Image 1 (cartoon, rainbow, N blue to C red):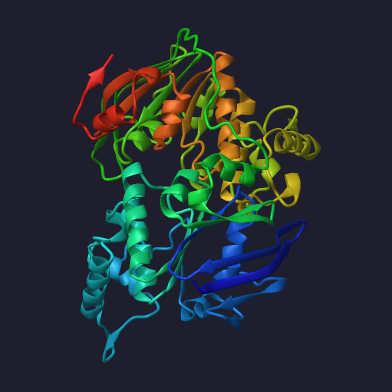
Image 2: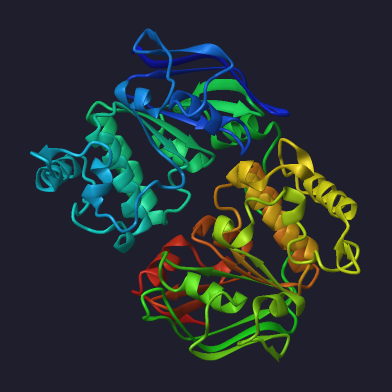
Length: 506
């Protein structure tokens, strides 16, 4: 098969870091080609070069056998290259059709012909089995549907090569399965797909070929059918990876976090959490799973002070914290790893070391008589960067905004675990992380449990819930429909409870 794309000896430097070091990537037409690597391995940089967001310092790009210079995304679009970014680029109060035609508005005289555009969107949607309503507003549809709108945006522009950047980071297991089917359908219809990911299961399920990068260098390009998950993981991380969490039997103690008949409203003003009661004991990990949008976000926000409580109580070590402000809860021993790292986890315009003391900057050793001690803040940053393997171009002084998503996540985990609170609310701790980082963060969470801390782990990853938890609670429509022993359940039973077709409390 001919190569639709050849990126030959691509090198790209940023201040203090070589993101791509003479990387070669060759993609066959009509295939699903995965690009695998840890966070900071150079995957997104390479794809940003292909999409015209960055220029390479050296090397060349060939499209369909011809040398090209891709100076900006418009050139990429004209060459038939489209990209679905990890953080979707959609206008929330526009309709699906308005988002798709943005910049390419068809006109009837001087008026934008949205009717004709909506018809075309519907035709493409049907052809690829995307099932999207052209007239729906973006703010009213699920994250999975928003991603389909991004795919439609590319197809509307006749893209032949579709780049997916970490496409499953925000999807439920069901949506992931549907996306894999959509990808296969796109290839059947003559498209080529470049899949940037660190999820080995998805590569095995969907990809034909896989190129592995590590620390900016090309390790190898292999046939997915002939390579095991274990081999792919070792190529990516550079060492053997343990896929399962090694942990001793839990020794639960007293109730550290008690939730009693909690009621919380969602963004639409409806009751998102209904009379919910749960207990998390010190020395245990209680996993909470459910299909996205069933009250998990509202529950986490109520526990951490980000949303008001309509009824019921939250007790931390016996103290009622239901109406306390966020800082007071943290001071009393609550830890929080938020699901939205940009909105609630970090101040992106601060330096990395400043983000690592965002809860404790007002106390010694980081401040004396109300004046910040920047030397102490930097030393603390250096220590945590080393201990948690947070990769950043300028060390402690790195602007947090410039770091990869996975390294931003590691920084939050480092900060919260270093505070060592009595009870943790941990939401999506490994979202967007690679196998090496996931293994490390799971070990740290289990180590906190073994120190006698209480951990509420909220995750959409069923593998993570089953592997890390001691007990599992299932949430459906804002209510707990089951509490089971992690060792005595499986994906099938949890799936039935998550869909609301089975209840099991015990």
